[in-house]
Amino acid sequence: MNDEDLKEELESLPMKYLHQIAKGRIHRHFRLGKRRLIDCLLTLPPEQKKAMASELPQLTPFSKKPEREASNAQPRSPFVSKPLSPKRAHSPEPGSPSVNLQDLLQGIGVPEPMPFIPDDWQREAVEAIAHLDVIVSAPTGSGKTFVATEAIKQAMGANQTVIYTSPLKALSNTKYMEFSQTFGADQVGILTGDRRDNSQAPLLIMTTEILRNILYDATSGDLDLRLHTLGLVILDESQYLADPERGVVWEETLILCPTQTRLLLLSASIGNPQELAEWLTSIRPTTPCHLIRHTKRSVPLRGLYLHSTGQLVPLLDSLDIQQRKGYRFHSETKQLFSEYEFKPYR
Image 1 (cartoon, rainbow, N blue to C red):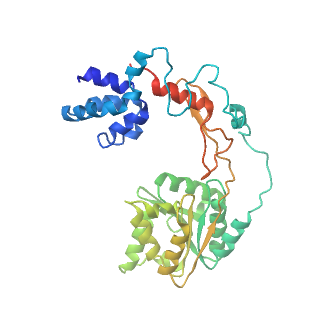
Image 2: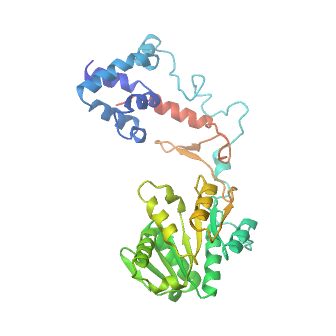
Image 3: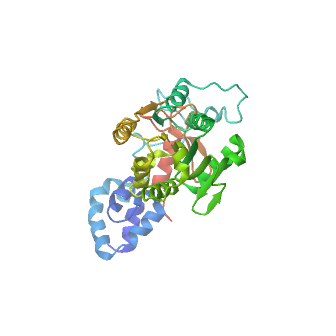
C-alpha cells in the first residue's frame, strides 16, 4: 500500500480508531486533531506504515469501502445510535432535559451586592487553625481564600510572622497585590527568584521552593531570625505534593517547618485528603492535623462546546456538570462530533 492509499484509508476512520492506531507510535497522539494526526502517521518509517496497513483490515467496517458499496448510506458515528438527519440535528434525545444555550448563559454577569456570611466549614477551619494544622479541601470558588485571610489576621494579631506560598511566580505576584490591598503595602513582602520587596514584613509571599531553601539554611545553622516568630505557613495548591518532579519540595517543606508553626494547606483537587492529614499528623505528632472537606460547589460548573465553524452549543444534556454522576452528550454536540469524525480530509 502506497502513501496515497494509506492516507485515503486513514481519512475514512473516526478519531477513535486513529488514536488506536497511533497508540505507541505517536507521542501524545490524543492531543492532536485529525489532520495533524494523519500527517504524523504518514511520516513514520516504512516498516511502521506497513504494520499500520496490516491493521487496517480489522477496521474495515469503518473504511470507505462500505460507503462505495452503499453510496446513499449516511455514515455512522460511535457517538450516536442512528444515522443523523437534518431534522434530528437539533432535536433533544427522548427523556433528556430541554437544555439550550440561553439556559447555560443565564446568570452570567456581576451579581447583586450581598452581605458576606461565612459558611460553617469556613468558621470551623478558622477556629481550628489557631491550635491545629489544617487541610482545607474544597472546590474552586468556594471560599478557601477567606480561610487564609482570617488565619493571617489571627497570626499577625499575635505578632507572628506569616508565610504564604504558591507554586507559581505569577500566582505569588497576584497574591502580593491582593494582600497588599487587604493588609497594607507596608505589611506585605514578596520573595521569588527574581523579586525581593519588603523582605522583613510580617506577611511574606513566596514560591514554595524559596521557603524550602530558607528552611534548608535554618537546618544548616544559618538560622533566619524570622523563623523564631514564624506562626503560620499557608501552602496554596497543595496538591502539588503529588507532582512527580516538584512534589518533593512540598514534602520537605512540611517536614522541615518548625514545630511551633501552624500549617494551612489549601487545595481544590486533593484526591486523598484523609491520608494526607494522617501523614501530616505522623510527622508532626505534637500538632494533630484537622481535615476540612467541603464538596459542594458554590459556583455552578457548566459545559459548552465551540465548533471550528464558530457554532456554540451545550456540551451535555444537563444544565450543570454533576461530578462523579455520569453524563450524556447533548444531541447538538453529538451532531457536530459526527460531522467532525466523517468530514473529508483535504
